[in-house]
Image (cartoon, rainbow, N blue to C red):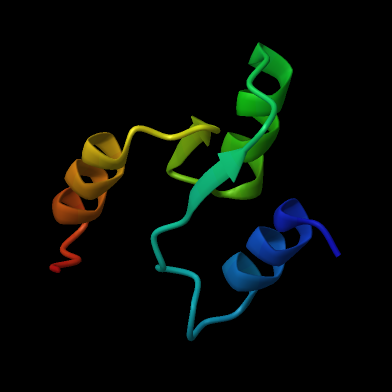
Amino acid sequence: MTGYDVAHELRASPQTRGSVLIALSGFGSDADVARSTEAGFRQHLVKPVDPDLLIELLRDVGVSR
């Protein structure tokens, strides 16, 4: 099962369809980002990820340290 599959499953469930999903991937082509968006990810980050950027994104969606 891929991350895209997990995202589709989460979006299909009433309990989790509103969850915020952020993709962390080693791939960052336009097609990869489009596939993430289509799967329901809000953001697509390419590894290695800047920790400050990730913290900022998590704060934006209401996750605290």
